[in-house]
Amino acid sequence: MSGAVVVVGSINADETLPVGRWPQPGETALLTGPIRAGLGGKGANQAVAAALAGAHVSFVGAIGTDAAAATVRDALRGHGIDVHGIRSAPTGTGRAIIVVDPGGENLILVDPGANAAFTVDDVRAASARVRAADVVLAQGEIPAVVVDALATLCREVGTRFVLNLAPPIPVAPETLATADPLIVNEIEAAQVGLDPAGPGVGPARSLVVTLGAAGVELRTPAGATRLPARVVDVVDTTGAGDAFAGSLGAGLADGLDLEAAARFAVDASAFAVTRAGASSSYGRRDEIVAVFDGLDR
Image 1 (cartoon, one colour):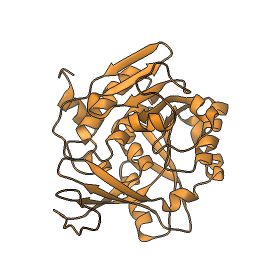
Image 2 (cartoon, helix red, strand yellow):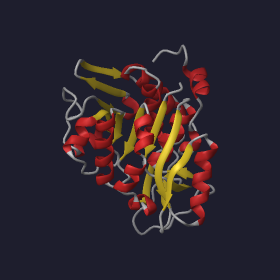
Image 3 (cartoon, one colour):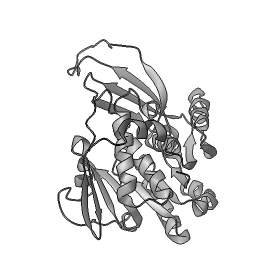
Image 4 (cartoon, helix red, strand yellow):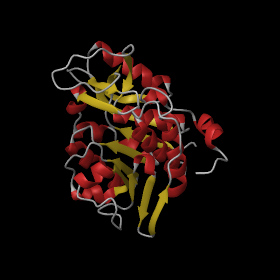
């Protein structure tokens, strides 16, 4: 894949804490292993996934002025991602605390930090990058007004806008109508008023509903298609949805249709859950193909 993807979104410094079981309220619990630090944030995760899938990726976002800022910027740069669109804001870099149990399920607490300082002016400053891109990919971890401005810019310049509305934020109806596709899981779909089991694409041009172990449902004006998930041994589900979204964006940017792009994205997310961490668990396109190519779904 070699399309151009611009990711506009969040960057966090992650800390992952392994536990033997979920603590009860008021309980003190010991970790079952060392704390792992790494790159995170839905925007950064999706940018890494798209880059590993072979896309040419530019990132637009905000980091703080603390020690974590250089670490996360260098981590993105290490994946070959263009970081010239990242602005420093006079605050802390976004942070996430991720608690993971032995079954791979997680609980995530996020301090938005500089992600909340991202502005419409930052979108305007990125207009040339957006115009040159094949796909622009955004998420719900930046202010809704910024996502609305980005969708408007994509409509004006004719760039495909992919929106992973996670977490759900109150974007304008015009923003949802621009999304091609809108990516949500079952919970997020219900939170924005969509029936995960219902027909149609809702307010968007196309819709992708991720269903965890049940796979993915794709909806376009032509109809619906269900893609089953891969059966794998799950280690950590952190960032699996981002692996899917970033890989999907890369496929669309390379000219694949929605179903073909989603098939690869399902494999990318399945690969990710077999390893620990968020973006650190993602595989290169050749690694993913080597594992799943030729296997029945």
